[in-house]
Image (cartoon, rainbow, N blue to C red; front, side):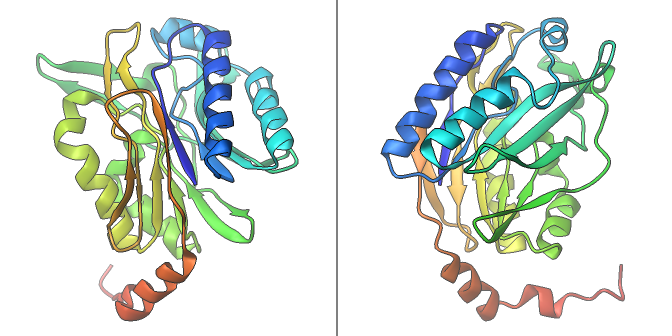
Length: 265
């Protein structure tokens, strides 16, 4: 399992070339599943990003399909802006299978509308249309769940994915440094512990053309909350082995799903 961390800009061809290089490097390190960050193909001023929105499949997904087919791996397309209508998009994540086929497609449910005084103001909902449901997919016989960045703050989404059988949950992100310093690692680890799942969180790092800085520190976390891999303070790829027998062991030792009180909520 690999998570790719890099800083995208508004040059789509450059971003795709860079993502391709990191995918190749991840495969050399033995990864058979590669997770890219949120908005990996174009990140910057919203107007430019919306202008670069694509159909799915389109140039970006076709590029990833070729990579997946060449290496016989699974690729989680962090996320891209998907055309909905004029000036409206979905923030969509796609899982591409070993043969280049689209296995799953998830439109971000929780939109990043925040106003942190003197630090960051961003209103994703001005152009992005929220998705309407959770999405899981089978990857090599293992059920995986999809989420994107700001979703991380909504624990009920992750519990729903776990209750629907997810054993791995992907969190492609462009999580900002403003909040990431205090919230990123605790939230990523909490989602793994409370749902007894593996979490793969691939984050952007550095400052994009819209002057927003992302926190980096991409992570792969096991169901016990142990950080199996954490990215350096730079663009790089992290890898870790996902041992599903550990998940079954944790769930047997602390049977959260057997003991939950559905009569209370």
